Structure formats: structure tokens, C-alpha cells
Length: 161
Ligand code: 4NP
Image 1 (cartoon, rainbow, N blue to C red):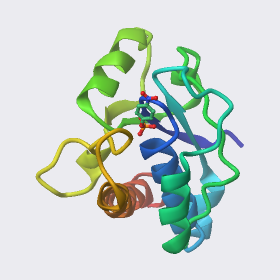
Image 2: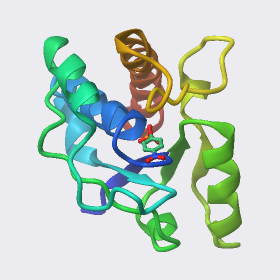
Image 3: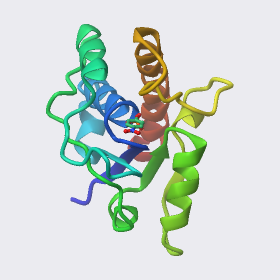
Image 4: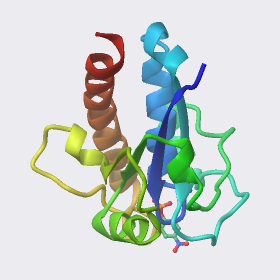
């Protein structure tokens, strides 16, 4: 069976997109029919951290809230991902612009902002890497929980009806 791919993309693939990845995997545990149909991954538009686990701050705050990010490893997004993933969801506008530059002309899936599924009047998941302390990483998790719930509702409609 060909699974439907969902790929989360940020800059480094060590903070925001692994958080979204871990949250979706966890939320799918309560959705076994949908879980079976999906393949979930995350990647970065930059290659600075390839092979590294998520940022310790992301992992620690996620663990406190019930998500295990520690098995994840960073990788760089590549043009081939557009053939493997139907949903390619960017954390911010710059990530989206970078993805549009490598999007093949025949891509038939959905390339857009992750927070479009959150039902909030916000477009971007703020990058917590340089500036913010714990509050920033908690905010990334809040947004990921909200947007993953919206994404699951959308995917249920599209794939299970
Ligand atoms: P992420 O955060 O895109 O959410 O993984 C960042 C991680 C690393 C860097 C920037 C953002 N960096 O410049 O190394």
C-alpha cells in the first residue's frame, strides 16, 4: 500500500519540525486507522545539523509534555521529497519560499504553511533557536499541538470518508 506522506519542514530540522513530527506521531496513536495510512517525517531547508538529534531544549520540553523526540535525526530536504510526500508543511514563510524554489513543476500535492491547519490568525511558528528561552519552546509545542489536531481532522475527512 502506498502511504500518504506528511513532511514537516523548518530551517535546521532540530527545533520546530521535529516537534511537529513528534506531536503528530503521538496524536496518531489515538487514530489507528489514519496512522496506518500515513508516513510522517521532517527535514530542514539547511544542512547545518544533518545527522544530529533535536535540540536539547526542544527534547526536554517535549518530554515534559509527553512527546519523545529523541529518536529523530536531522536531514536536509531534497527535491525528491516532493515525490514521496503529499503534504509538505513549512514552519515559516522563508521555509515556504525556499521549498517553492525546489518544488518540481509536476508536484501534485499540498505545499503550504503548517499553521494553516491551526485555525489561528497566525502564519508562522517562530524560530526559538537563538532568541527565546523556555517560553519559546513551549509556544512551538502549543502551536504544533493545535495545528496537528487540525491536520488530523483534515486528513480524516480526506482519507477516511
Ligand atoms: P529550527 O531552528 O529551524 O526550528 O530547527 C533552527 C535550528 C538551527 C538554526 C536555526 C534555526 N541554526 O542556524 O543553526
